[in-house]
Image 1 (spheres, rainbow, N blue to C red):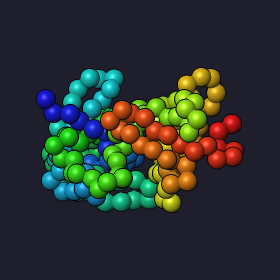
Image 2: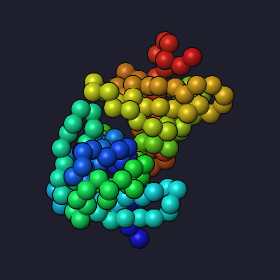
Image 3: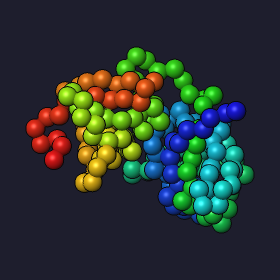
Image 4: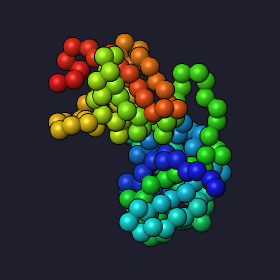
Length: 173
């Protein structure tokens, strides 16, 4: 059975020629949205899966704009708004040591160096300089934002879904 991994969310249409506006959740947008790439569109509320092939990809402001084969107008892509884009696990490349896919990091439990469990990573935000990991606290309180930098993230074990961090002053309140 093929596994599918989230690479983005369709947030709106763009223009009248069938483009969709996507907020990406992948570091490999150029690869994932290359012409001819196969994606699956999934509406969580509708329970339907639509397989599409990328016809065109371009960047516009902070969005990836995509056109799919067999979708030529705004009327055809309007129902896709709010859907999530997935890529097949068969299309994932081997990464270098120390590199990870978002789906490997999201869901990991985060511990301090003194073994205090802070919570689980629920989201990754791209900021340009470095990614920021959003930790949903184990107990009550606001989410914790940690930068993915060497001074903070000390150990990543994706097999056991465990991450150890160094808590710098002011990082966790």
